[in-house]
Image (cartoon, rainbow, N blue to C red; front, top):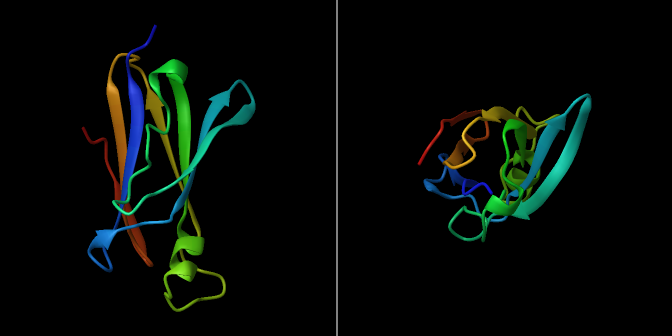
Length: 119
């Protein structure tokens, strides 16, 4: 059984604060299908309350985290554009070590973002 797991963390770099209340969906790519694995919302610390992919479901493969940035900005009073420059942010990545902790953070602002493999 795998002992690895996946976590994420979102920081709003335009405010210097954690991005609370941001919806995140995790997908796994299987053959020709994109399968929804989980959906969570960030807490006051910009993190999910538990691993977005716990060890029970952790396995090798291609994944995508989809961050609902537009809805987050709307809820936090960021002046709307039509359409928003950043609405949904997909981050595709691979998991190759089923015993490792994968951490995929998002640094977010209305006009840019960055990510990396954290620890």
